[in-house]
Each structure stands twice: as structure tokens, then as C-alpha cells.
Image (cartoon, rainbow, N blue to C red; front, side, top):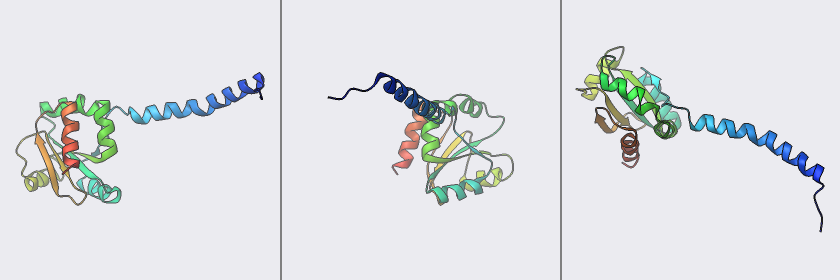
Length: 149
């Protein structure tokens, strides 16, 4: 029976720690990004990325004066589980519906209240939507339902 030389075992432990410890930190940083990563005010860019990645698009249609919109950004969109789910499964875009292409898109999509959250397929066809503030667990359920349609 062979035994490991204690000095050699210590060296092996140190080397493993040196190589594996940085990986642990990087994995945590990606997993807990802390918020949904949104493309800001560019429906065209969202469509382009969705087509390239073959992903659905999650749209946060908001107005700057909207209280529930601000609450979503401060709470639900910063929930770690929500961020991980949406960043992994969707191309995310936040659009101010009163600036740039926002008014035209609001009319095209028939929006009447904010916040409105819509999930589109990669070709830009609406799949599922909801209006109003939504809690983290319910936003994940919303995304799962859209992916299953």
C-alpha cells in the first residue's frame, strides 16, 4: 500500500486552493448579479439580440412618473432569483414609453397603463403580458408561463 508524502499532500492542497478559490468567487459574482440587465430604450437592439441568441424578449414598458414602475425597479427587478432567471432566459429591454420610439410602440402594442410587462418571441410577436406591480415570485411564474406557451 502506498502512502502520500505529507509534504506532497500539503503542496497539492495549496495548489488546488489556489486554482479553485478564484473560480468560486467568479461563479458567485455571476449568480448574484443583483438585478435584471436591461437594454435601455432600444427595441431594435432587443430584436437583434433575441434573433442572434434565439431567446424571447422581456419588455418593461414604463413611464418616469409611474410609482409602481419605480417600485419594480427598486425591488422586484433587483431580486437575485428574478435577476438570475431573466438574465439567463430572456433578452431584457426597458423602454420609457414617453420618449424616443416609446409612444409609437405604446400605440402599436395597445398599451393603456404602466408598468406593462410583455414577453415577445424572437421575431417580435407578443406571447404574454401583464400590467401593474408584480412581486418577485409572481414575475418568475409569469416568465415560466411565457416560456411554456
